[in-house]
Length: 165
Image (cartoon, rainbow, N blue to C red; front, side, top):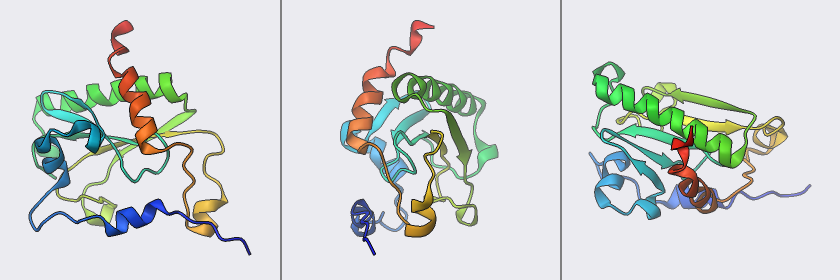
C-alpha cells in the first residue's frame, strides 16, 4: 500500500492557539502584517483573507472587522460591504484561477462547522469539475494544486484591476 502525506496539517496542529478570549480574525488585522497573514484587502467594515488551511486553492474568507458571531447583528453597512467584497472575490477568482463553480457559505456556531465560532466569516471556495476525488474520502487527505503563498500573490496582483467592468 502506498502512503500519502499531508504534511501541511502538522503546521495547523502545532500552530499556537489563540489565547483565551483571543480571536485570530481580530488579532490578524490589528497586527498590520497583511502579507504574512494573507490579508488580500481591507475595506471600511470588512476584510478579505486567504484561508491558511484551504479546502481548495483560492479558498478566501470575507470577515467583518467587528467581533461578532450574530449574523443578524451586522449593520447594513457591514452586510453590504460583505456582499460587495464577496462579489469582488468571485470576479478576481474567475479572472485568475478560472474555476468552474463556487461554494459559498457562513457556518454559524461550532455545531454548524465554524472553525472560529466566535467571529462570523463567509467562505468563498472555488471549485473545478473533478476536483473532489477519492483522496478526501478514502485517504483523509486533500490535494491542493497550489501553495497558499503563491495563490495569495496571484490574487493580490489581480485585486485592484477589478474596476475595469
